[in-house]
Length: 470
Ligand SMILES: Cc1cc2nc3c(=O)[nH]c(=O)nc-3n(C[C@H](O)[C@H](O)[C@H](O)COP(=O)(O)OP(=O)(O)OC[C@H]3O[C@@H](n4cnc5c(N)ncnc54)[C@H](O)[C@@H]3O)c2cc1C
Image 1 (cartoon, rainbow, N blue to C red):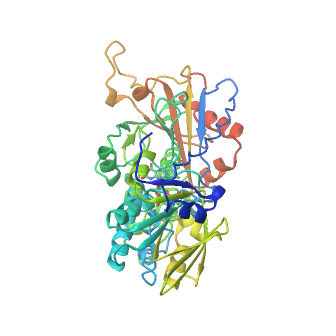
Image 2: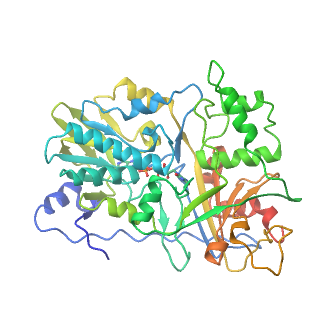
Image 3: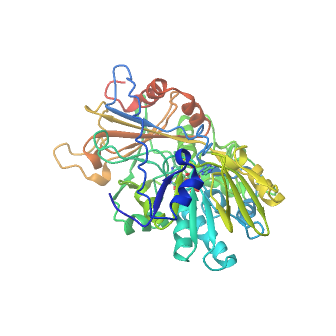
């Protein structure tokens, strides 16, 4: 195990305060993170994966959704209002505070940097700063604040760090870590790509979309009509739901190809077109993604180096005045700091889990109420024997070696009543039959409510057009 300067604490058992005081004497040995409960492996009837992993972010009390989106009528300035420091004591970070590409990994990284800048500007030397949440935003802010010479204590509600980035590392089940949260990058030139390079984490490209219905391959569905509807909607005097802008532009929302395209948009943005803004629309998914193949938790671990991290320590109350900040931890303890960086997801801010005393200014409360929290869920399946039909182009020379760039690794399910319409094929990269399904919007909410057996059945049924024996 890599030794770091960080003291990793498990708060709930010993009591956060007790452990912090203890840590002022000789540094205690890090307490290991409790081992993960193995995911039950349901069977899917005739077709049964050897390994199966799925997410349920929609119902997870520490995310209550997957990614923020902008509803119709809401300005991007709501995100700036959320990001504004409160009395130079409270500083908000997290993907929802980013205006450039909210809802993404890069947004989280950028927001942590921005909040750290704000704190560093306001703070004196060597202050005690708390960070709530050990996701990417919290980890970046922590790294910057530690480097600036502050004493940083991170409170994380879960028994692991990473937040909405979660790599399941289990070499017996998965040849590459199964990513249950955010992992795909729209380009190789991103903040996250720089982190991957810094820590030498390998990635691959997933792309060459293949659109297939029960009747066979169909022509690729173009995003052009959606772009045209957005452009037209952005000329209107008032913002409308993207669904209305599409209808106004003559796009048939019931066309099976359009349904598959909109499912892919929901899978990357978390919002359906009837709840998304046209002025600040979801980013349309690219035709290829950079997909990291390593443990993204190492990035978070590395950024947290030098801070005290208290796991299993949900903060339930933030009290603040001109003298400082007091945090109430759900274990019943209360701790004082000079300032706090709050990185909990928008879904948590919208819920009742975190109380502020005094109440937040109207600007923040308005932004929290106005912005939307989208739903995205993921399922990973590995098969000993591939159940899938060939996906190579029909005109490919069967005797010639396959051109990896021509192998479609992004599958779209057209028609039928599939719950999950967007899939990635990792077999060219891993040499094993591994598919990853991503579902967004209301369909993700539906998927999150299924038990493992029903979720598996829904996943296999969704893949019917791609199975060798549908
Ligand atoms: C299924 C899924 C797929 C995604 N796909 C992509 C993708 O392909 N590409 C992309 O760019 N983005 C993607 N995203 C979005 C991306 O993962 C997030 O934008 C990013 O990880 C958010 O980071 P964050 O630090 O802002 O928040 P988080 O990672 O959520 O961190 C907040 C932390 O606060 C903790 N917390 C919550 N409440 C409390 C409390 N009361 N006390 C203490 N701690 C608390 C949480 O446990 C969490 O660790 C996806 C998200 C999901 C869920």
